[in-house]
Image 1 (cartoon, rainbow, N blue to C red):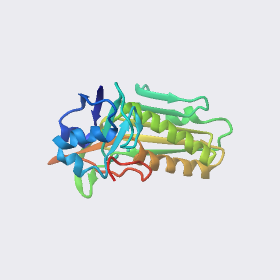
Image 2 (cartoon, helix red, strand yellow):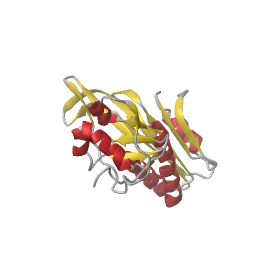
Image 3 (cartoon, helix red, strand yellow):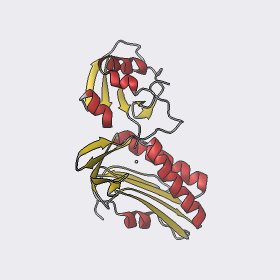
Image 4 (cartoon, rainbow, N blue to C red):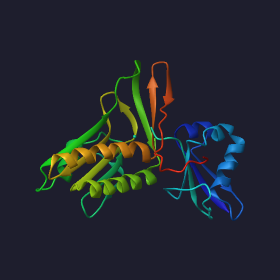
Length: 240
């Protein structure tokens, strides 16, 4: 049977491919797909305790069965006006989640989420800073597994809205090149009172950075590097 395989971030550099299509025996499991590539690229085996496998845009156990036409993704540890969105989810409750390659309109998102009964709207902006541990940064670049990322953002936002009893939650993440001082991600929480709004916004960015398959590459005057992150403990790694 034939399956589609995707690689992101540093894993794309290791394998030298963004996408591959391979034939595997009927009855194969996800771990067999990993082994297929690990035999050719030993670095994958070295990273197996931190990389994650996704099956059809959902985190999956290595023992999961693979079927004809499935999409498998190799995921490294996550790093986190008139904009055109490449992915959007807006549910009936008014929560809003999007991925874009344009500058993020934070104020517009806040206005979109605010209701008449809300007495607090908290906006978090993740900004590209000009250095990392004193090493001057020129700019950042983000990429993600878009179809899976937007689903995870919506899941996180809706869970947070219920847990913290806020009215609406919104998240927008930007991809591509981010200049110093620009926002790469915005999380907004609107609620009748300030404490739930603050708590929800903080929880939102913390979970987004550990659960959503988005990766950051940092560019310096003397080189570039993929920023290492860490998956949340709840996510099963390719190999324990």
